[in-house]
Image (cartoon, rainbow, N blue to C red):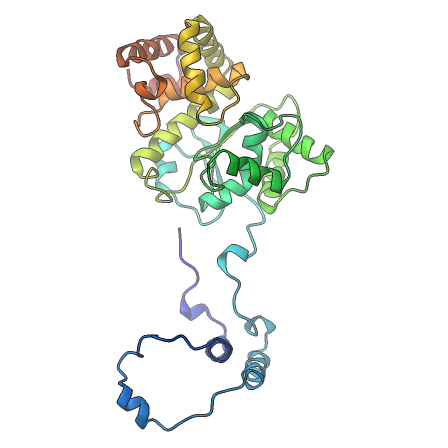
Length: 347
């Protein structure tokens, strides 16, 4: 993530106003016992220094106002907003198509959408933080695929917070990667409008992006997936992000390639009920709605075949022997149609 502007970008007068604001804060803040000595200054030197009258809060405030007027802008009168209250991005930037290597290498400073080069109907969105990703996509995730959440209405903010807390998860890590059909986005935004649920800034930006792509219709074809930023958690290292990206891209293929979806569904329906039940139990641990059979098939193919990181998927987590998992994986791979996903899938 890129840093903010350099010091040379600060307008005239702002530096003096910052100094005066610091003086104001010192005047209003109670003294803290045990505070460290200023560097390079001894207590003896402090005693020798001529006493200066402490500024009153009125005097400090007047000084700040004067500096602001001298600088010619009201923006320098008050401390800058904390990052969590700063104005958020107004839209999603559409970038050039990118392949997996390019997607893993970029770290955009604002929400940016990249058509996936081998299949441009799959859009990969990168947000600058897990928090901004969560603000944009958590409610959609609950609406589309979470157990216990309604799939016919959109949760309010308080309801979503309660649902996440009840699941034992945290808001920012409710998901690492997201994946939705264009039609899922259309249903979500239609339900929000019908229920008079206000969208937050990130959701509104996503709605504008979806509308611009013609996705706000029941028969729209396309997929939106997300890739989390590097380093936000220990799992989001190079290996983890590569596994998440391939997992989400397989969902994108399931949504945009009817032949791939049909092949996966054929294998899923052909599994023994014990095998399907084992995957349902595994997916239930992540809060997926196990009553949605298409969702179970889609997540099974993504975890079983396309998640090469044992922090996210193992045979033990499913409760099946490793050699049996390998045999099931081979069945899915052999059924895959030719195309970019099969070509990228290790045998």
